[in-house]
Image 1 (cartoon, rainbow, N blue to C red):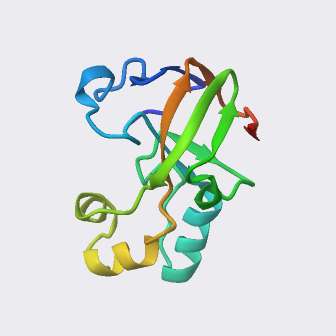
Image 2: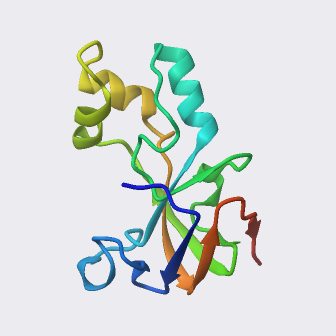
Length: 138
């Protein structure tokens, strides 16, 4: 994972240069993942951790947007159009990276359940840049 200023996304294929780009994506919602910076901050406040917004390993970090409300909705960020597919729930692998010795994996998963982001498909190719606005379509 690395932080970049912009990503190119391709309809049905995901992020150009990502290890999951293209044919490896067999299910809806594998093109792109998003997470709310506020949810990471709230997690930190609840459990006393110091995660940064990029630690949960999602592709795009948002602020000021309720991602759970975007399941089933079409929206644009930059010149790309996306469709929210499902919540991106925390898994044991992510918990293994982030829970640390002072927190059980199960507790990590419980604390981030329904708060760990959104899985989305790219429906129109484009560019997503840092600071880009998320706009609901239709």
